[in-house]
Every structure is written in C-alpha cells, then in structure tokens.
Image (cartoon, rainbow, N blue to C red; front, side):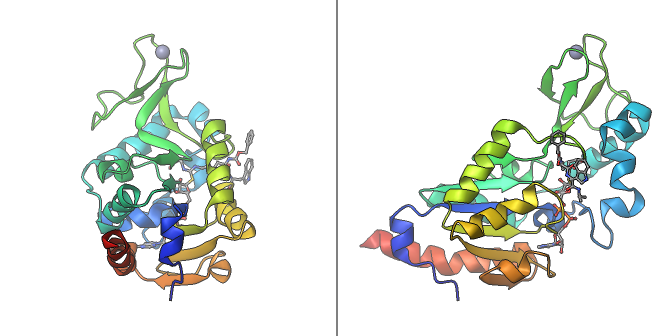
Length: 249
Ligand code: BV8
Ligand code: ZN
C-alpha cells in the first residue's frame, strides 16, 4: 500500500506527475506505440523530424491536421481531471507531460511543463512567431504565416532539443520531489524517460500507472496496473479522504 503519510503532505511534500500518451488513451487520443498506435501507420522518422518536414511539409502537415481533428473531438478523462484536482489540493504539485494534446490544460491543470510542445501552437519558420491556432481543419496545407513564411507545429521533433527552460524545471522538479507518479508512458523517449530515474536516485517514491509493464516498472515502489482513468481516481480517493481528514484537525 502506498505509504506516503499525512506528515509528508503537511510538510508540503513535492509530488510530481509525469504523463505520456496513455493518460489520453481513454479520451480517444491514439497512443504512439500501442496496438492501434499512431506510429503503426507511420514511422516516427517519417513524420516527426525536421528532415521529414523539410522534405515534405505537406505530408507532415496532413498528419498533424488529422491528429488535430482527432484531438479536437476528445475530452479530458477522469485521469486528467484527478491531476487537475491534485494541483488544486496539494501544496506542492507539478505536472510534467510528454503529450502535445493540451488535454491537461482543458481539464484545469495550470502548472504544466510541456516537454514536447503543443499541437495547438504553430511556429513560423521565417519570423519565429509562435501563436495558438485551433483551426480544424486548417484552411490551407501547409499553412503560412502573415509574413509569408511556412508554419510548423510548435512541437519537439525527434533529433530536436527540448525547450531548455522547460527541461531545466523538469530536472529540478524530479530531483526535489518526494513522490513521482508515472502515468501512461512507455518510457522509451529520452530525455523524458530519465526523469523518473533522477527522482528515484534522489530518494523519491515512484508510483507507476500503466496497463502494461515498462522499463520503469522494476524501479517503481508501487504499480497501479490498469487504465489511468480508472485506477488513478481510486488511488487519489483513498488519499484525498485522509488529506481532508487532516484538514479537519
Ligand atoms: C533529443 C512530439 C537531443 C511530436 C515527441 C538521434 C539524435 C538525437 C536524439 C536521438 C537520436 N536517437 C535517439 C535519440 C533520442 C530521441 C529518442 O528518445 N528516441 C527514442 C525513440 C529512442 N529523443 C529525441 O530526439 C529528443 N530530443 O534527444 O535531442 C539534442 C540535443 C541538442 C541538440 C540536438 C538534439 C526529442 C524527443 C521528443 C520527440 N517528440 N512528440 C509529436 O507528438 O508529434 S515524442 C512522442 O513520444 C510523444 O511526445 C509521446 O508522448 C512520446 C513518448 O511516448 P509515450 O507518451 O510514452 O507514448 P507511447 O504510445 O509510447 O506509450 C503509451 C503508454 O501508455 C504505454 O506504456 C501503454 O501501455 C500505456 N497506456 C495505454 N493506455 C493506457 C496506458 N496507461 C494507462 N492508462 C491507459 N488507458
Ligand atoms: Zn512569420
């Protein structure tokens, strides 16, 4: 049983949640490497790289436009909502996500570190302007900036560095947290997959929420095997009650 005690909460324990595509699976957003995963039809190097974009921006944008239309039809699920509630309830909580779908923010999370960017932002390859663009479908493919430059999705492609400030904050959060929830990630993509290792080396209690084993499972102190939308609310319900009991003292 998860042994974090109330004192840790009282001392403002730092809890970090790291999420991957699995947290959005029950919302209907396809994962990257699952049986019906996004990559099943495409290979990452075909589409999610700067080289692929330089070679064929139309193909890359057709894929992103298709994903944007899919995601636009998806709503946050109970796992997203519980994470927003944890942010509102716990004195020291931060959410780190590999996802680009924006569903954490749609569920009410505000303290979100987006390691890989956001599919609802576009960036001009000429003037560098970054704007939110929620048009589905896009009026033209590939889309262009007012300056005439080609727009690209404001996401981190394979072979591209993660935003330095975001990555720095994520390292810091992993180093200082007392508990890390690792939710719905295959733990295959770096440097995101190293964050739980850093947390563990710093003495954190690791809770993995997944429907299957991952390379991190052996490192976890507690494994919640099942869909995040079901098991995470139960896990939180068991603790929120004791937390609110603490508030009555
Ligand atoms: C970097 C944004 C260095 C785009 C993504 C050569 C050159 C440079 C780097 C490398 C290289 N070779 C390898 C690398 C490192 C590379 C990497 O890690 N490759 C892997 C594939 C081996 N990393 C990078 O390139 C990174 N950059 O290293 O730069 C650098 C430094 C300086 C200068 C230049 C370069 C950039 C990585 C970011 C790539 N962008 N996304 C887009 O989305 O379009 S990654 C993509 O994978 C998504 O962000 C996704 O989130 C992420 C990880 O996947 P997961 O989230 O884990 O999803 P997945 O489908 O894999 O797993 C789902 C899990 O959920 C499963 O475990 C499943 O069991 C579970 N699940 C399913 N349903 C549920 C569930 N769990 C709970 N409940 C459910 N209901
Ligand atoms: Zn421009």
